[in-house]
Image (cartoon, rainbow, N blue to C red; front, top):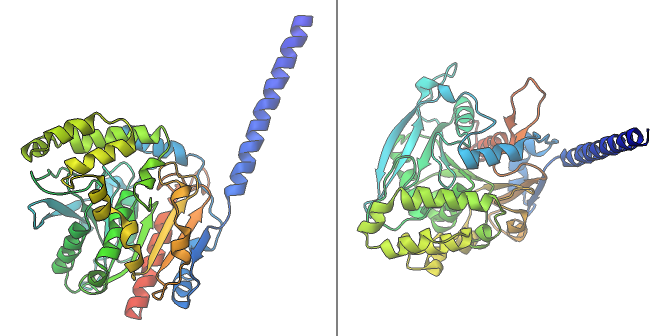
Length: 404
């Protein structure tokens, strides 16, 4: 009888522990269901743009599986949220840059989109900048964003960076795993040349793609306002300042990123590095185990001659004060890669004569996931995609003085 009593006590204690953990989880989830926090200087122009983005003024219901989905996507290239991908077809436009390197524009083919009317010649252009080792058909699922943009009247394309999406590096070229601002400038010029009647252009940078977009906006501000006719930009999960961004990536995500960078940019592109006389630097980089150490070592492989030169040419923080294009940054406070400590709140609150920048944060969204829970039978919707497209539509209306 004594043994039975003890077992019963253990069962009751375990049940109480499970109930307490469940209650704590429910309370933590309930605390995360609230409207996003929005930061900006408070100028009239930005207030008017943000007022046209409904997703910034309602409670966000994060899906419970956001972190599991991101971990699966990074580790094995799959995702819990995959939908409508079979409807997408792309047409590739190769771009040759001045140093002989290649990138590409993957245009969404309207023939693969059902129940969407053809675009007018003056349909605005949307360039999407992918994550660090991914491409158009990446595990992070660009298809929903591209299809949503197409349904809203945009002509979307993905700018595929050097060494991504089946593109090979050219021996001797200088490149960056985060992308090069001058390559993005060339891509915008090519997009405008392919569709000269387009009313305006906009861009969305995702994770590492936000680094090159931010760098372009500061380094080529006159081009963005002039030849590119860039109405607005959105950075989803930006990391802000180098090298702090990669020094703070949390384990095990840091180990996964190291493995991806090593296999994607070093092993798969070994021959161009050897042909450029960078074999010693390549071997040194392959020996690095930390993310910060690997990226510092890759600065030699990329042709910059060292970490200082690499940061000077690629860090968006160095040119952030020159940005005048309307820009919305979106961050999650529980992001394990672009961690909350990176967020440059002061930059968004600065005295800015252009009144161009705003930041939206949510408590729970993981890394670039931001999907919402809308019931068991409803698909999980990417909140950040909705907000990004609404903001860009508002910026385009502001730029042209009419409807998109």
